[in-house]
Length: 499
Image (tube, rainbow, N blue to C red; front, top):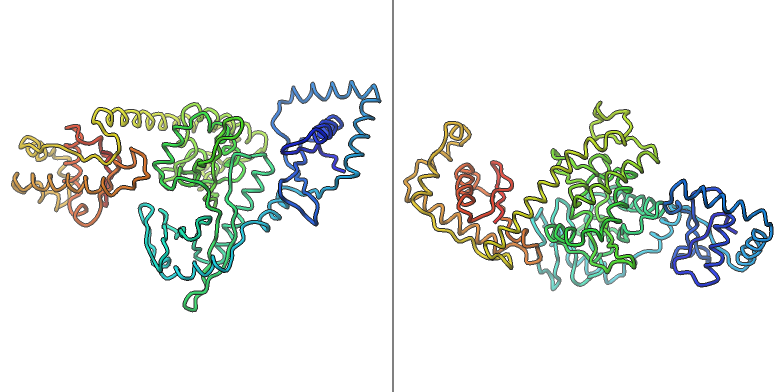
């Protein structure tokens, strides 16, 4: 018999009565015993001990006082105790901690068949050829279609095995670490009732190919949009329906120090909302746990977005408030990756509003720019995203192109200056070719991207790198003429243009 109040997922009348009696007889403690659906140990259903649902200290105090008052009748607690004893005499459970339940669940998860392994082996030589790609890329090999996902690691799916995503690990240590991180994350979610955070089921196997053993992590394929720009759009469209998930994700970041928070790593799932209208968020990349500070606020140097930069303004307030509450309650120090003296030993709740103020201001500016982009697209009649940039290059544009300040000339490369010294007619031809390249890039962008994503053009390569200043200057002229929205990122290696 559990001394902790029992919680059923979908209780019948009897279970409701038992749950009420359990809570009535419980005066102390902040934990609950949850019946875990479809999980058994030694043939018995599992009760998992988790933290109780949120409630204020004042409400707990009032409820406890009312209980104690009714105990004076003797008859009421006696009836509750008899009901509890009668139920548990005929219903037995195995009581586990959240970590034990997570380990038991992961042992009973996805099953990899011989057919799955044979399909993987048939594709393996092609899989090993994969390099870092900008977007999802499709290759056919031995009759199979392999989809490679964006990123530094080899992550792919095979259309013949639609239920899984595969991640090729660099070593068995890396593969085990990924599985352990998922286990730790699941334990945190279970223990803190973070029911809107979905962690895919996973396992690991070894594949022998041409005498070499490779470690492969196999994960459940959740219903997600693989394109990051589309994920950003979904976050915006779902708005307040993600508020509760944002609150839970804030708790998760504070407790785990998960630091790589991005639209692609924490995507919202294409499931229907729960009965209260809340949408879940998936946790598909859990390996980086440097700092809760990075997870909440991001890190520009290491190009980490952070949770606040995923949220709308109302949600940023939820994040800040929740972070302060959880860090005070748990007594956790918010450390930075370098252990800066500014943060060392300071109570995290006291510095969160100070850091958040600047990050929220940046997020507001980003959202205002997104709104301006929407107006730009409406004005230009951009509807499906693949419309060409159409603009006439005039002699005045070329004259403007050549008007460099002494400071601008100092920043130019030798190749840039040679480009600017070319005859106006040749520069005009270069400009026309530049616009043609932009339109070819727009056409090649993925169809599943958002309107914004379909019109982001990434220019890089030897031709651009020879004279980056010249092409950046030309892009600025296109923006001035209203042909493109503007330059969103640039350096000597490449330039991203929003059309």
